[in-house]
Image 1 (cartoon, rainbow, N blue to C red):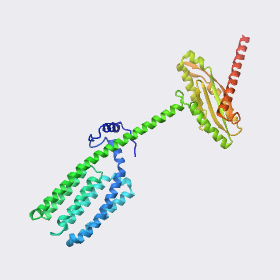
Image 2 (cartoon, rainbow, N blue to C red):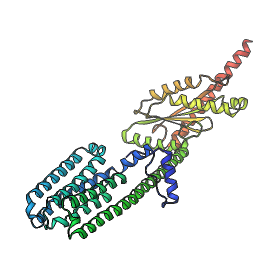
Image 3 (tube, one colour):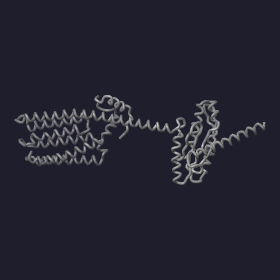
Image 4 (cartoon, rainbow, N blue to C red):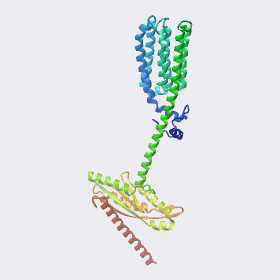
Length: 413
């Protein structure tokens, strides 16, 4: 079933949710009408199949009554019944074998079959002789056909009304033109039969209009409910995402990081492998914030996040712990530390590349500490503390290098 994305449909839904007694228009907008028709395909197929099987059963069963009801035209009546049953069976098998063909041709197929069923009854009536029971009694079969037409199909009320009127007019033509019922003592029976047929069509048509209205309201309300559920689900997923991700960079936050790393640690225990952690702290970030404002600082953090994401594998995990601190977790083969050291070097170079922002060059570097599970601890807190300590050692070494460079510059001057 196609999902509705039309505001028109939901406007309808909200309107009739407030007052379900309001009549619906004859049809929906084109796209919404297509979705509605697609939604009732299972009901169409089910009712069509049931009507065909019941029709074949009744047509064959009433063949036994023909022996009593029209003995003079028994052979012709059975030929008519055989033709109707075989045609119905062919249409039913075609619908079962090719559902798309059935859907495309539903209206023509349904009105054609119901017309055939009614025409078969009228042909049997026309073949009967005066005085036979079928002469006046078989009209009841037409009431069965018209009742099923209005209550068991999904053709338009207009099409059903036209077909019902045609069957009634055809019977009147047979009764007056061929049987001449209006000229004899059976004229009162003719009046009663016509009254019943017209009443059946009128009641059936009104019932069909009401059913059509209820069906369309149910369709709209169902889609409104589905949309509400989807919206609630989306809001829940968005809330969950926001609770586990940093709103600025879009990276997982500490909560999400801890949950995922526990999973990585569990896998490492099962496979005998390791998990490497890289603790990253930006150097030179605070002066940018102080000099150019928080907008510049946010631009730096976002840029660093993109750089980190561009350097990890799908199975790796990067997160922002807070402030200017980031952390990366990478699965490693046991005792294979080449990956973590090469990534540390590449990250230092990549993060150190300046960012052009509003005509200004923003430059930060990174102090990076590494540690591995389970080599440096059996829990996340232990391994993270080891990586944090290594990061501060790296920061101190970087500070010493910068201080030495400054002293050399002063001495040379």
